[in-house]
Image (cartoon, rainbow, N blue to C red; front, side, top):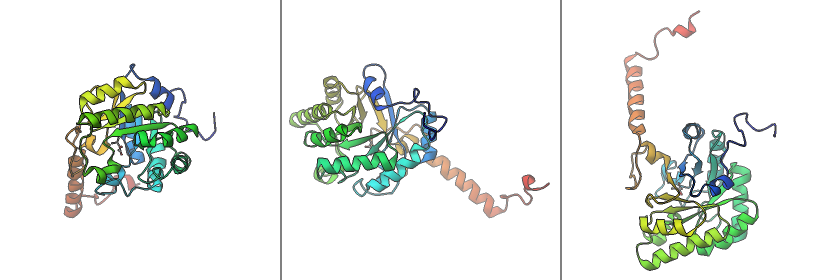
Length: 278
Ligand code: KIV
């Protein structure tokens, strides 16, 4: 045991890449995104298996139109914050656009930065067959890799928007090849985004690593949602496949509105604070 380990971190209880990999067929994986320590503490307390600092932070945290402007520095900054809130969940960081596409060497260097500077335990890489060598080299460096195929948001301009992928037979075959190539390259799990349910089922049956779906139906080995969508936190567009389990955005507006009304009417703070009077 290292002295720097927080007391709540009991290594046996923590999720890890090997445990996630071995979970296939035994349990459904639950993954959410988080971008700060407060949310990290709450989702960890709720018992999620995996927390992803996704490059979705470029949209839901930074307010961008897409994920392309996110940097390795951004992901590391949020990773350090989220890591401080996790006692049990496995922490994964997204490799941002152009932090790995250039070469396998660049991929290893960027993944190394995420581990060293972002406190991540694994990295997620968008890309299929053409990026198998990049994944292989990262894995050979001792860094677990979660793959991501189907709709790859970093290719939004090439795709002409955030669209369901794999609808034609040729596209479906390419996605199946992508998933197999990423598994063969050593990934321990793989995200399937926005593909038809039947294709997700085919991929899930074809690979020995867990598939984690988002907009890919119920047959995947696990599910991931962007936390802001799950909580009903945002005011913008919510993907049709996402489900809001709460209306936290409305709760925040109501609370801040109540505070504002009390400040303006002189109700808050009370003239004499009982705690300050001896
Ligand atoms: O960036 C992200 O949050 C993601 C998940 C939606 C899988 O890639």
